[in-house]
Length: 83
Figure 1 (cartoon, rainbow, N blue to C red):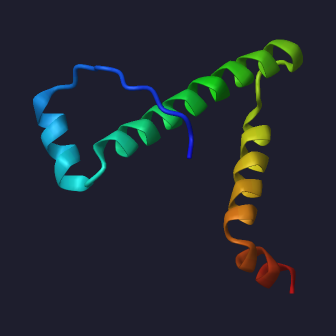
Figure 2: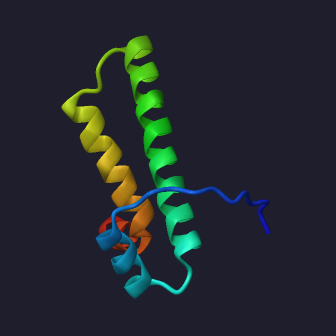
C-alpha cells in the first residue's frame, strides 16, 4: 500500500455530496482525480517540450497518433482489417 499523508482541503459541498453518492471511499476517489490531473499536467509539459524541440505537431502527426491509440485500444479490430 502506498504511503499516505492526511491533508485538509476545501471542496464545494455539492461536489462532496456527489462524491459520497458515487463512492464509499472519498479519499481514493480524490486521490485518483489528483493523479489524473498530475498526469495531464505532465503530458502538457512534455508536449510543449517536444514541440519546442521538434516544431508543432501536424494534423498528420495527430491522425497517426489517434490511429495508433485506436489500434492499441482495439487490437482485434486492427487484426480483422489486416486479414
